Amino acid sequence: MKAIEMKDDVALVHPEECIGCGLCVTGCPVDAIELLERKQLPPIPATIKEMGAQVLLEKGRLEAFMKVMQS
Image (cartoon, rainbow, N blue to C red; front, top):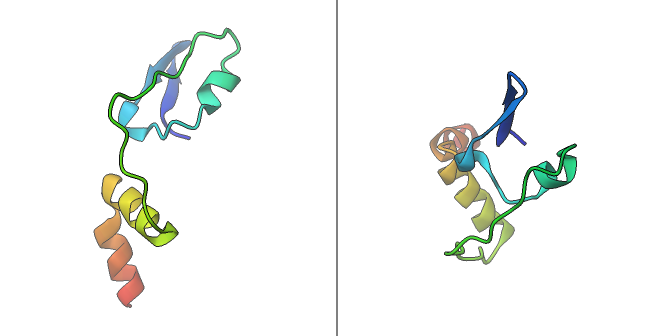
């Protein structure tokens, strides 16, 4: 994922990119990362189509995706 980048041996976290998968936790060689429970959980999408649209919208890519699908 792109939620963490290393710069000068320091991990920089980009929370807007985090999807909560936990790969950073299991991949950290010094056990310096932990996931925190989100206070407000987003609603669970009813379908995979709805989930895809939600992800595209959050990433700012929904409009471009819709243009490609219409061509």
